[in-house]
Each structure stands twice: as C-alpha cells, then as structure tokens.
Length: 182
Image (tube, rainbow, N blue to C red; front, top):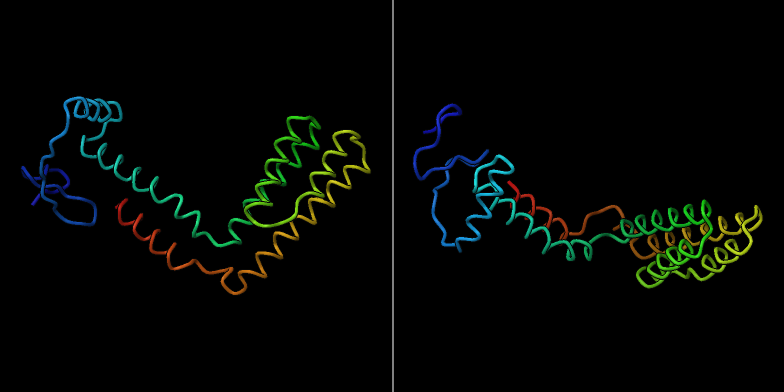
C-alpha cells in the first residue's frame, strides 16, 4: 500500500477518501494526448488531473440549464431584483440611451420570465433620461419599488411554503455534481 511519501504501485491510484483505484489506458488521438500533456505541464499537475477537470467541467456545463430550471422562484426573483436595481442605479448615475436600452432589456426579461409588469418602470426611466431631476428620480425609485414588490408577491403567492426548501430534483443534481467532483 502506498503512503504519502511513497508513490502508488504501478497500476494503482489513491484518491482522497476513496482508497485505491485501478489504472487503465484509453485510446485517444495523438493531438489530444499532446494537449493533455501540455496542459498538465502548464498547470504542474498529473495528466489524469487534466482529464478529470475536463470531465468535471463537461458534467457541470451539461447540468447548468437543468439547475436553472430547478431553482426556486425566490432564487430567480432575488437575481432579477438585483439585476434590475443595478440597471436602475447605473441609469441614475449616467442617464444615457445605452443605459436605458440595457435597463429595458432587463425589464423585459423580468416581464417574460417572471410574468411581472415592468412597463411603468421603463416609462419612468425613459422620462428620467429626458428630464433627470429629483422629481423624476423619485418616480423611478417608486416604480422600481413597485416592480420589486410585484416580484416578491408573485414568489410568495406561487411558492408559499416551498420558498425555503430545495426541490428534490435540484438536490439530486447537486448530489451528483458533488460526487463527480470528489
């Protein structure tokens, strides 16, 4: 059995917390082998680690859309609230056509993805760009607050008690990802 100071025997591999694993070979194109060797040398890790990272990355990338679908509405809501607030802050700091376009895009995402009316926020922001004074800034703040309240109300109404639990589907995906990374 290999110790920390002694390398594993030929054909064996000790993974953290999993005991010995058997080594095997895989057939890959020479170009891929060269890329793996170059990456291993560049990062100062064994070649198998580069392959492990690649497979782990692939698994995560495949599961990302499914994870997003499984997120609780409260999680999605908090993201869109933050995104809207940042867009409004940027618009108030620099009222410009570019910033109103970005804010409008974000507001439309909220409307489409969460089913919340954001037209009054967009109109208030357009008014602010044309006339950036204290009164129109207060109008933007009030409109943003109403959109945030609508988002929160929708999340509470639709999710109820489930707001604070992780869905089983998401729990199983998280568990699978954690296992794949170990």
